[in-house]
Image (cartoon, rainbow, N blue to C red):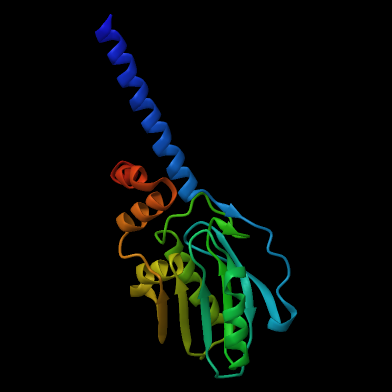
Length: 199
């Protein structure tokens, strides 16, 4: 009887662990849709939408600047959308730059099944640069990417034809990113679960 009870307890612990890891994984990677609405009037931006090899239709705002003044692609961090980049767009517009602010797949108004911490999002970066080349031919292109935006830029780097990139708060590896997120939400127990979640 004792052996049976121990087996039942062990099985319950394994089941709870599996469900917990799945739940945490879902929490970290679930889509974050949002209704964004119209762009701020002072950006003089237009809505854009274009396909990406991530499988999504990427939505964003294109604000045209001074001709031959350059254009900057603004890429938000994980679980954020283009609204997080508005102040940067305003600053750049005042300096004469055009800007393209986008929602990555699975965030904002861009559909998607899951946030992939740069893996699928790299295709959104490539598609955005392609769209800039179509809309503003001959312009120099720069990228400002924070966190996920920076990681997606790094993963897309071989296929990008841009003149500059500023990467902010980019995680060094997916292992470190997952462990840090779990530690923030669940403390040392979460950090210990990191290898299981990655598997």
